[in-house]
Image 1 (cartoon, helix red, strand yellow):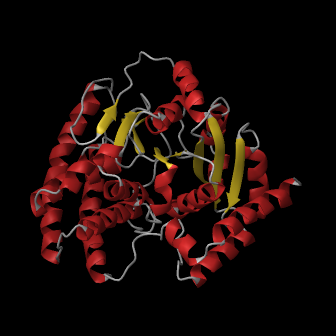
Image 2 (cartoon, helix red, strand yellow):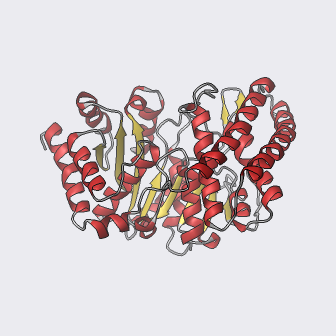
Image 3 (cartoon, one colour):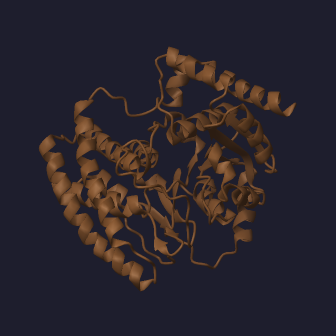
Length: 408
C-alpha cells in the first residue's frame, strides 16, 4: 500500500518502507519524555486463551516509550480475573487490569445509574469508555492509543506508527486512525467495510445529497479499524456508543469536536488479520448481523443530528440503491482477489450483502421508532460534573482489586 495518495479531506501517512522501526521508536522515546503515552487494551477473558494476545504482549514488551497499559477485562469471574493479573504481569510497563465484572466496579456502575448515567449496555464501547475514565483519573498521559486484543499478525511497529502523528509535538493531529489491508489466510477480509460501509456511504450521498460528513467518512480507508490514538485533552468531552458503533462514533466525535484538519490516518501494517465474526443471519443479537445494525444506527443518528430528515421512504430507497451499488462493487473486489491469488466466495459475499440490505431498513425503522433513545454513553465531563469524587473513587477501587489479588 506504499503510495503518495492524499484524498484532500484528511491527512494520510504512508509506510514508504524506508525508515527502520528502531529509529521511529527512538524518536517516540524522546517525545514520551514530555508527552507520556498510554495504551488501552479492551479484552474479553476468552482472548487470553487465544493465540493472538500472548504474541501481542511479547511484542509490547519492547515498546519502551509506553508509560502505562490499561487492560479492560470483560466477561471474567474472580478466578479468571486472578489469572488475568498473572497473564498481564509479563508486561514490563506500569499496567493495570480493570475487572469490569467485579463487585467494586459493579458498585461504581450502580453509583453512575443512581445519577441517571446508565444503565450502559455491555460491549466494547463501554469497556473502552471505562478505561478512558481510568486514564483521565490518572491525569498523567498526553497520548492514548487503543487496539484490539485478537490481532494474529501483530507487530509492535503497528503501535509506533499509530501513535507517532499525535505524539509528535510539531504535528497538529489530535486523532490518528490506523489502516491496512485485511487479508486472512488466503482470502480477502473486511466484509463489513467492503460490503456495507463503503456502498452505504456512496448510496447515502445519492439518496440524501452531498454531506461533508459523508465525504469525511469516505476519506477513511478502513473506518472500522479498531486501532486509533488520541491526545488525551480530547477525552473528557468524547461521547461514544457502547455497542459495535464505537469506531464510527469516535470518528463522528472527531468530526464534531476537532474538525478534519486535526484528524489523520496512517498505514500501520502490510498485512492484518484477527478473529473473524460469523455472519449470524438468524440471530440479530450476535456476529456481523449485530455489528451491521449498530453501525447503521450510528451513521443515521449522526446525519440526523446534523439536520438530515429521515423517513420510511428514504430508508426503502436507500436499501434499493445500496443493494445495486454493493453488487457492482462486489465485481471489483472479486477481480482484485483474483489478481492477487486470493480465494473469493462469491456466494457468501452476496449473502452478506442481502443481509446488510435488510439491516439498513431494520436499523432505519429502529431509528424512527425510538426517537427518545440516547445513543451515546455520557462523556466524562458530565460524569465529573454530576459526581466530582467518582473518578478518584474509581481509581481507588481498581487499585484495591489489584491489591486484593496480588498481595501488593
